[in-house]
Amino acid sequence: MTPGILSTRKLSPSQRNLLLGAGLSLVERDFIQIKPLTFADPMLPENIIFTSQNAVKMVEQAGLWESLADKNIYCVGEKTASLLASKGLKLKRQTDYGAELARIIADEYQGGSFLFFCGRKRRPDIPRTLHQNHIPLTEVEVYDTQLLPFKIERDFEGVLFFSPSAVQSYTTYNSLEGTLSFCIGTTTAKEAEKHGARVQISRTPTIESVIARAAKYFREFRSVEK
Image (tube, rainbow, N blue to C red; front, side):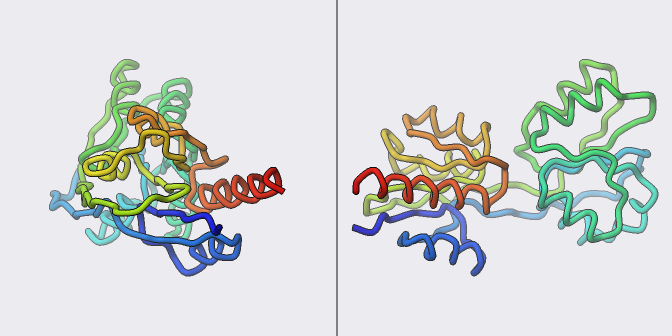
């Protein structure tokens, strides 16, 4: 039987083909949506933090790129870093997780202030660590993550999660008890584990890595069955 996979976000054609090419069947549905927020143009310090591509896109839409050209940019995630670099911005540091970036800033901080372009549901790691170390930080919320819960009427061999919010949305009407969940990172995995999921964590926090983890799992599972 062909294993069935549910992706809790719509995938690009290339991402979709990675799963289909691995012999998996796929159903896709967005369980969250991003809503832009109106914000006033802030006074920009020398150091700017981004932790998601969504924040980058919202700041771009606000027409602030020229103002960021001479700033030190700190970011989380390979895709966020690639998007920022494609805009010609100067990347000072890039990490996989916000907590890691916060520790680096705290350890290497040598004066100056930071501004964090973030979502309304952002994790507390960066603000908490910087405030604890008396590092000036301004937070500007540029988008909100809204849940799109939906009742799933069939069973899947695996579910792909790309954010804690997607887990929260999915579990509004569906159980994760004992469900094999492929998660984009430790934060998403912890949220899935709260609901009794069996968790597999991607090697790196990217969509492609989650897909690769699922494909590898079912490839190895088939080998054991034989």
